[in-house]
Image (tube, rainbow, N blue to C red; front, side, top):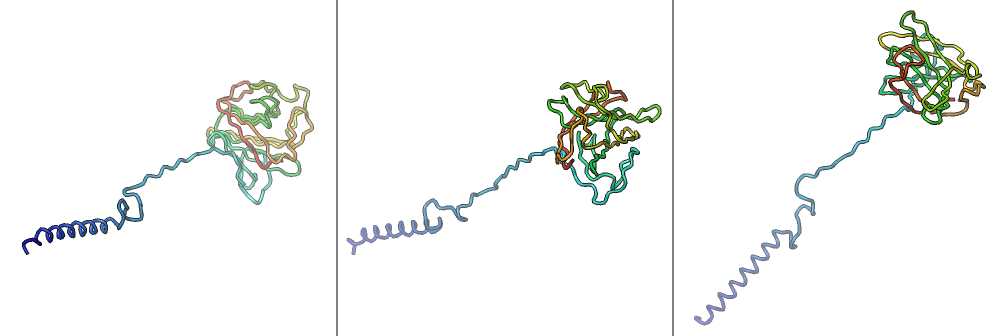
Length: 231
């Protein structure tokens, strides 16, 4: 019996080691290095989202039932079918098209002039332009049919270039620092100094605000975009 004691002790030690190893593996999911929870990472995950904000001049339909157009300097509900905002809302363009005629309103946060130019080529060059303002002193409304002959002007009246004044009707008002100019013109005037807007679908435009009631006063804010549908 005495000779078997060392052997039994050795066997006992081996059994203990094997049992300990099995217990260890069982606690780790049966495989060395395995992670509990199906391998899901421990701790919080951070997701970074990048948001890109785009300024758009895509117009919104304002009504499905149009009322009579009146060039009185007041944009009434139902008077225009579409509108587009420029300069973070400092200038809003309203329009409708009926029977080959464009009816438009420019509503600008200024006590000076408001303007729109159709289809410029380079910067302002070749733009078919409409300028308008309301004199502070007596409320007289001025609306001009112009053409930009250079990239930064000048933009003389079409009549001075040998063309024609093709504004059919106009009106306006100024109150509380806001100028409203309304006008109508044919989509296709036949004047070489005007853009033919008929059948275009979309038209690129430039818009601007001026500080005073003068055609020579330089603009203090400008923007550009596309009016669609138009023509």
